[in-house]
Length: 593
Ligand code: ADP
Picture 1 (cartoon, rainbow, N blue to C red):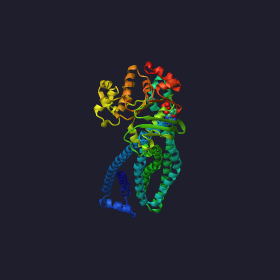
Picture 2 (tube, rainbow, N blue to C red; picture 1 turned 135 degrees about the horizontal axis):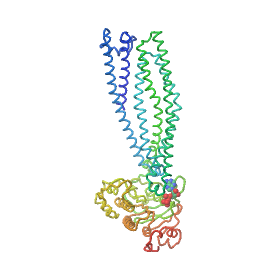
Picture 3 (cartoon, rainbow, N blue to C red; picture 1 turned 180 degrees about the vertical axis):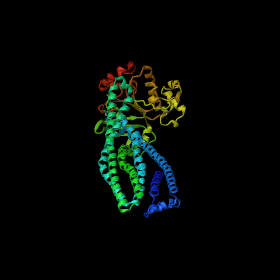
Picture 4 (spheres, helix red, strand yellow; picture 1 turned 90 degrees about the vertical axis):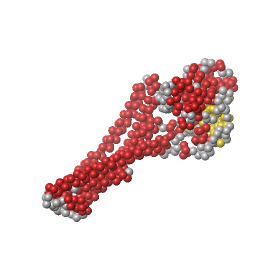
């Protein structure tokens, strides 16, 4: 920034000087003595730089000298124009990068709640587009303002020297401009904020329809999605056009005002030259030339706020992310726990998302090695319940304890190191098989360990058949793997990390019998020796469960083992009839089913 400011100052000083050099040139032309008659620093400067090179007797020779010096000055000036530009570009790109990185780093540390509240498209447009718009703040405010500002400064100093009265007249334009443009700027700020939002909406539609393209196609919803996108796209462009219309009013206003001022100057200046003789014709010409030139940076300065409004609107959206407290910032836990001793318990836990109760007075206890299964209609609160275990959310009332310690007292990283999750949506990252299994800690595990985990998850066989084995990159969202294979990768991931507490959200989608068997075997191995909380759909997992809790609208309505619950012929029995018998053809292998 310092380099940019210094280079801008130097190039504008040289620029002003090249104009001042016209005074002796014009004087030579008009047959007058070369240096200006009024005493002052301008005359001293010209005398110091040109004085010795000029020969009053040799007019043509002097002219040639002046021209050569003007050329040299302009060349030198342009070297600094380039330097200032390069440094400005670096400043702006690297500040944008830092901003983008900071927002991303902060984003990843925000609590789950933020992500369920905010659309993915809005998040993406913040990271990619808003950081880029904020860049304008640096281009506009730092680079352009410094450049235009020093230009105005140098030129005004020269103008003041030539004639302070005319200069004051020329400068009246500035306050008038500011006043006239104020309401315009307010409009712009508001409009741009809406525009950024519109862009986020458009990104959302795009993101949803691309990631759900299978659904779109199978439901023949192309036209529906198209309409949604065209609408969002139209809204955005319409807003852009409206904003441009407002922003462009600034230009004609500035031009017209400028023209009025120049005409006034011509009139009063001519009087000074012709009637009063207080100004030389050469000085007046240079004065007018500089004033015309002054309009350019003045205009830039007056438009700065308009440009900045756009950037401010984006910056607000960025700071909305940056100002959201991270999990670490709100974590009051101070106790780091190294291991899971003997039990986890929910003690009269209730939970509500923004006033809407989802769990009510849930209590249970899982001792080490237990498998607790949660069943219930969708929307009953099963996912919410297991989300409380790694503290994605905290109970609204009641408490959850781990070996008698309230979860809220335990530091988040140490709690999460003890819990593993295998969820319905098996996320496969755009990386190699090996790194997908050793996700997030590739360096911590040896190839042998990764392979052992894959074998236990029944995944080794199909991985070995991939073109590059464990080094095979998995495409966008693991598209090259079947559903069952993806599940087994996810299971291998959990096996490798070997957490003492496991949350298992079983997939509901049916697999073919062979896949089903391989996945089930893998799950059985995964459950061994762990304390497991499972959102259960598979009959065999349920049959082995230590205790089954039946949830209905956030309450535990029944609890017990598979057999005891079936014998009750209550809610579980009904659920079982509806859900499990239909899916599992060999239900007879499960006792009591
Ligand atoms: P299940 O897993 O049993 O299907 P969930 O725990 O997903 O049930 O949902 C329980 C209830 O909480 C539902 O009524 C659902 O609409 C609501 N819910 C889930 N997630 C959120 C959220 N992030 N914000 C507000 N309400 C939610």
